[in-house]
Image (tube, helix red, strand yellow):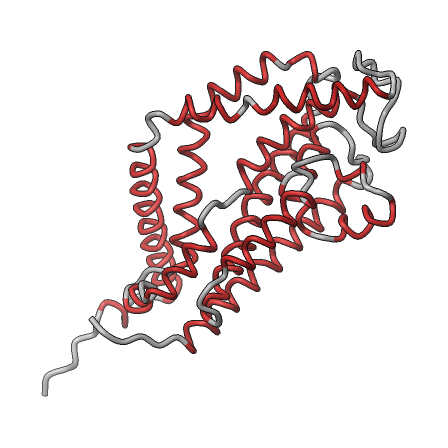
Length: 303
């Protein structure tokens, strides 16, 4: 009687099988990232000039804050007068530096078209391809956004460097300590991930509603003001600031800039970083949960 032939998976120890699966998954992710990066670099040829033009509103902001501080007698930027309190307030030069840093933070955390794109794919039935192919929708979108940010900064590094060089006098205290730089970079990375999973979770609402544009508009409106992109959150009244600081939106713009400028006390910095990591974990869980529940109720038909 012939003996059954064992398949490779039958003789492969679980540890080796797990390692093989991980290597295969990493190769797939690497291929997706490489493809998405190449695609974005192709149409980013004129992006450097466009990025430089985006810095033109800085001139308007400088004149605006100059007028504000001129009205309180500190237009020369000596920081003798600070708005927002003496401890964590902002002088004229600091607030211009803050605005420059928030532009970097928002470039990390902004996710244009993510939520609306997910909702559109659900509405038009394109989501079904992720249900029949061995590709994870959230993982694919995340890698695509990573490629987008890499392409953005590869092309935009020169305009950023030029603008920051021209505005170097506004950074009176120079570069912060190395551990502050590490915290700043960590806050930017987590801000990128929070922005991604938050907007992806909004897009998943498309499984229950046909259109999310109104909800997305409301979110963008609140995000613009409550993330600190328009002005430092420490300028808010104390009772309002306490509520806003409880929200995750401050990690999209205000927090990284405040870390770099030393506006977060060093004894509070570890706890603030831990809270940001907790918000990140929360939105990852919410996004995954919404996707898993959504695909269970999704139905499509046709060719």
